[in-house]
Structure formats: C-alpha cells, structure tokens
Image 1 (tube, rainbow, N blue to C red):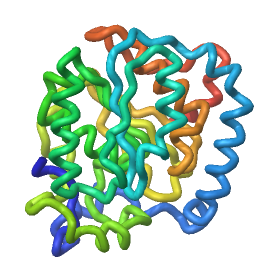
Image 2: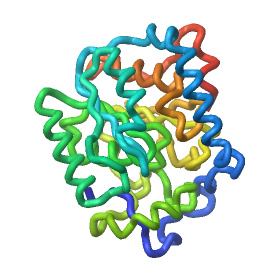
Image 3: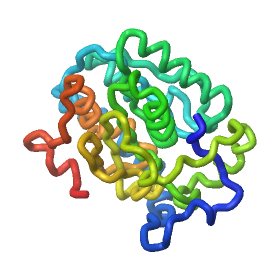
Image 4: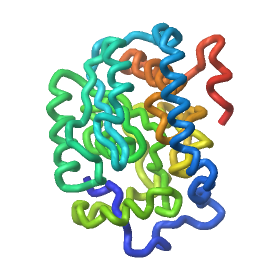
Length: 269
C-alpha cells in the first residue's frame, strides 16, 4: 500500500502553492474542547435512539469499519452495533491499536478485505486515519469495494501541520512500512474508483476540515455535519447519514439529501 501516509523528511515538498493550500490545524479552542464535546455527543446519542430507530434498514451486505489513529475496535463499537441492528454484516478490523501504516496493519487490512469480499463487495467506513486506509484499499481493490464513507479523514492533507496529532504520528513513524509516504495530492490522482461520501465538520478539533473533502464528482460527495473529531462515531446525525448511504442499492448511488425535518442537522457546506 505504497500510498499510505508516512512522515516525510521535508514538509516543504508536500505543500501545494500557497493559493491552493488548505488551512492550518484547527484552532486551539476546538482542540481543547474535543473531550467535552464528545461527551455531549455520547449523552445525546442515548437521547436520540428513538430517532435512529427510523433510520433506513440494510440489505445484509458486509461492512468493514476502520478506527482512527491511536484507537482500537472499541472506539467503533457503538457505530458497529448500530449498523448490525440495521441488518448489516458488520466487522471491525481486528488488528488492535491503530498505530499507522505498520507492516502488520497494511498486510492485515489487505488480507481482511480479501476474506470479507468472498461473499460480495464490501462497504468500508473509516474514521480519521481509518478513512485514509479505506480509500487506499479501494484504489488497490476497487472490484472488492462497494463504497467508502470517511469520517473526518484528512486524505487531502498536504502538510502534517494541518493536524493536531502531528507529534504522535512522528513518534510512531519508525514502525511504518518502508516507502509508505503520504498519498499524492488528490488532484493529481485518477478519479476515485468507487462511490464515496466524505463526512466532515468545521468544528473538528483534530484535523483541518479542508483536508477531509474532495472535489465533488459523479459518485463523490462531501457532507457537512456538526461534530467533534472524537465524536463522529456517536453523533446521531452522522449515524443517520451512514445508514442512508449504506442503504442504497448497489450500482444505484445517488447524492445525499436530508430527510424531511432533518435538514437543520446538516449545515450548509
């Protein structure tokens, strides 16, 4: 997975021209309030369960959920339980702590996708770094992937200073596969091969929201929500959105439209 991210020796080589470079890391206030806002999201999840019971049900196809940097399958347990309740065949990644593109992680994800795809194409939901992994898996194995949904995933990042976890990423870099550099800039790559939905929040306190979006295309979309970075997997709006995207019939993808009465839950881009 040669396009998986790694800490480059010279950040200046990664930046685009100043006129097109996304903004810096999120503001300090957004960053410092991440834990509090996430706790609020978890509390609100319990209060919105009745609303989520009306979310579109699934067709039973396989869904793989990938955690973010420094997280395990425990972080996606609520999300996976919700999707299982809708009727999907849901799987965590089973690779322990996500420390980045280590040899075990890279080979493990490839093997897992091949195993799961035996019974049909797999939808992949990736949170933060997990979403970057999801997109690279889809680029490598488009025939195995039904769609990709990313949650606050900075796949369009051009400089590691656009995230608040830059020091952590640097610390773990010695474990990464040789040659695993940051993905090339999105605008230089071929069109993304499968349908994708990029979920982002302008109140994300960990990564610059501008790095989490793509140029809209025929089967590629960006959907804004109001969420902390650590709260995506508990946010009722995000859970509804994921359910809606997964419920689409295969090969019948359509852009997301908020259901009646829920438009306020999805801020304008």
